[in-house]
Image (cartoon, rainbow, N blue to C red; front, side):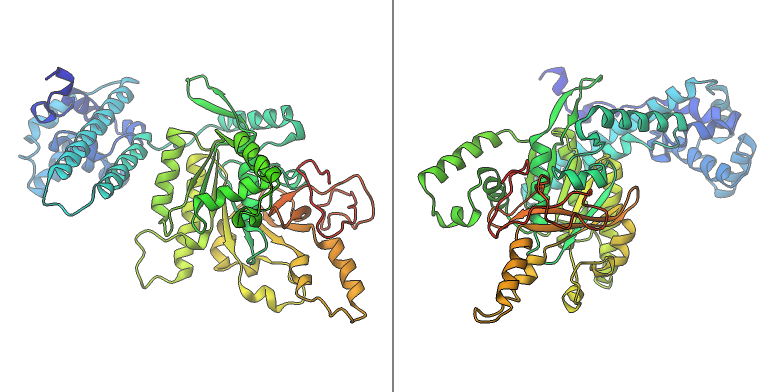
Length: 514
């Protein structure tokens, strides 16, 4: 067998005792050295049990404000009866003789940490082999893969280490870079564009590390708007090699879409109906003309290779969701994550006694942490309570969010969708009713209009934005700004332009043309 494939059990685990002793000796000689390595090393990183025990005691003593040197360590281990186990007082003296001085202590600490990761990789691999070769194990192979993947991602997170504090100059440079990119882009959008110009104007696009909650009552178009945003961002994605050879996104986004309610083919059919302009209900019924079929084929061709990834596993836990998002970012890139919808995520390790509010709190905090960890915007769709239906003005408010306390607190942006036509349709008077003509006029004005209400935004204004909505294509788009006769965007979100009155059934194309 080639040397590269030599059984790991015949090789000693990777370690370097001299490097371990150099780090411990440096801390014993000068306790200030502990501050330089504490973010890199933990007791488990040491190969020799004696070294791990000594580092753990050093940690405790220094954290408690006590001096940690040969004298105090000897006294501590004598009291515990472990002095002989660590090699006696002589070994403590050897550590001082082996002490590293100056900047090399960081190099030794990183070496010890790296060798620890390699040993754990060997342990994970050996465990995988042992499990996979046992014939009496009832656990399916697929579960074994998930377990191994979970362990590997946990190890990868540990390998990344803590970032710790960064200088203000470093943070300032990042902010200037973001502003520069926004200045160079058309539309002056700093974040991921949504494709809706007025919404982008108010939000500045979707920003890294932000948790965005998109909520509405059923049938308002939550999934449709999320799908529109996902397609627009993926369609305009442009990537190039970065300085380290890793691909970076210059425009648009690589999009991950967790569809917990709809299957991946149903979601794809929605996008296909949007792009092809063939109503989705006609596609479902197969009521297609030759022209419709040709439009569908042309749309499918343009969508090939779209950096849009769909995961439709139902009942996924927040830990599974996070692991899959990390995997996608490592393998294919990930610039925008969309979850449809929040209430269908299951918490990780919660007890049955935990209330739903506490479970949602865990989920929203985890999503916010994931957005920061991956440095991407996360859009989570959410249901609204029925309290909306009891009010005369049915525009949603923050208090209408289910388990609103935790969602409102953790979100950077909260947006609602409101379509007045949805409620007008249910108030249609009879044909002979004198109010029927007035109702028709109202429907003509509101049929193709929806409001996106920005109810919370940490870093910008709140208000309302009017957008076009085509029920047949289940599509949101920009309203036509070239004509007068409307009441504007409302709430500061309309930009001062007026809207052309539409007839029921009018559709809007992405550039605003009818």
